[in-house]
Amino acid sequence: MRFRLTALVVISFILMLSICGCTQLVSDRPSTTPSVTRQHSEPIVIPTVPLHSGPPGMTWYLVSLQDGNATVPVIPDTTITAFFDGQGTIAGTAGCNQYNASYTSGQDNLTVGPPTSTKKSCGSPAGVMTQETLYLAKIQEARAYAVDETLKLVNGQGEVILTYSTVTNGTTVPAPLTATTWYVHSLVDAAGQTHSPWGLTTIRLVFGEDGHLYGNAGCNNLYGPYEKTGENSITIGDAQTTRIYCGIAGVMELESAVLSLLPRMTRYSISGDTLRLSDAEGKVTIDCATASL
Image (cartoon, rainbow, N blue to C red; front, side):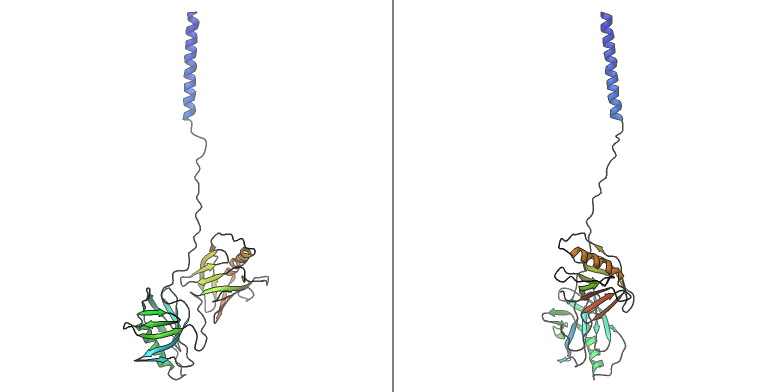
């Protein structure tokens, strides 16, 4: 009897050791479940048009300028313009020659650097070259500006030296390609089908001075590279866009058409306040204007 009890105790002890050992072995095994690293999707951020500095970015037509103590109107049949691109360059026509200059601006202050210009000599109307020389000298005296229905440039003594209007007093000067907000009015695809955002959405394009195209394709903001490769030639790269879905019928289809046609554009022409982008054959087109539909 005593032997049987002793044997039972020994067997029980061995079983306990076995159980403990097995438990230890299981706990020491490496986990077979692989670790998972979750990738957080980053939101797509499309840059917006760089902030505009200086007078509003539109074509300003000179109305009058200061000559000594007198303020004199622009000579009839001559046109002097200024376009401030918001990024530090002013450009336009000085009556005979095209000019451009650098500028810096704060909230109301403005300074303009020495202009560079083409070298034509215009014989008529009388006084046009004298007026041009005076204008290019006066614009460098600007120290401030004020905008209401007109644009006034003011010198360091607080005198108005140049007054501009948004209305031309002579020959229409084309809007510049860059820094202008162009609204798409219609587009023609490779199949000859015409699309228009009228009454549906607004599509806008801005060719920045930094070589990037900004805008909105009808639903999503867009951003991509472009380059002027000649006097009227252009290349436009594929655009990045945000990833919003707009539920209005036809908007996403129109957006897809715009995004697919932009890289096909190789030519551009500007007439007044309208812009036409086209392929080399002129069959695929995007027509824009400075005013929305």
